[in-house]
Image (tube, rainbow, N blue to C red):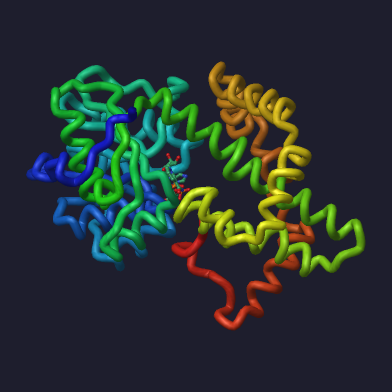
Length: 340
Ligand SMILES: NC(=O)c1ccc[n+]([C@@H]2O[C@H](COP(=O)([O-])OP(=O)(O)OC[C@H]3O[C@@H](n4cnc5c(N)ncnc54)[C@H](OP(=O)(O)O)[C@@H]3O)[C@@H](O)[C@H]2O)c1
């Protein structure tokens, strides 16, 4: 059984007197900074000179410094910028200030797991990783709830790293929902696997393939969008609330029968499992990480950008945009309500 922690198991006073520097003000950065501030912590945001988010963070009542100043100021330095730029930014602007007794924190283990960042021995290295998008970390906190988090400690130089990490997670609201103890190694590999094989890669390919099958067979793209894409969230919401049983309770027996008959036809178990194992293997042996690092460092993101542009032009995106815009509530433009 995984070791779980809740608010009663944590003590936010481990943050008393500690200055927390949040590097980055994107999806996770704004949520961590604002939640910690609202939890009474001493927070600042570290941004690059000329950042478009500088004014946003100040407007939200946060003190903002350059990344170097924030790293120097903070006792806890949480890195919440894109994973692929973290190593360069760390080396140039953060490492010089990681003196003994401080803590370096992450919301995902990529750069530690693949040794892109090697922190000095005298600092604590912990992870407070919400299992949800940053905008939801903020919106659930404001509503008195929270997003479940993973906690991990890579280096426990002070002896208090776990207590500080758990206190931090209380500060961002995660301990209200539950905190699971893990390692940087396992969080990185399971997170990459989940998003590639199931949540993002798997789901998008499944929806796209379903959409194209119906459209190519002569059905209206709008119908294909409602059927294979829009309804995905409604179905997932049921599973999220009460497991597959809740979905099966709510759908018709015809749909449930079709689930058993056609699900394994669409995703042949042995073949899909073999492919999933190959994806996992690439994550475990560093092949995927190497490819992603090279895509950024050597290939100017050519593959990434062309795929993104190609997807934006896909009929399912164009039809979906139009349908969502015409819904009486104008679609769910607020990312806080997104299902991911
Ligand atoms: N997104 C999620 O839902 C999610 C969930 C769990 C964990 N995580 C993890 O959380 C961390 C942050 O992810 P995120 O999605 O929140 O990031 P994000 O929104 O893409 O981060 C944007 C921030 O990074 C800054 N930034 C980008 N490139 C930079 C550079 N070269 N130099 C300095 N600053 C730079 C941006 O600066 P400007 O303000 O100047 O543009 C901005 O403040 C990652 O480790 C990620 O794996 C994310």
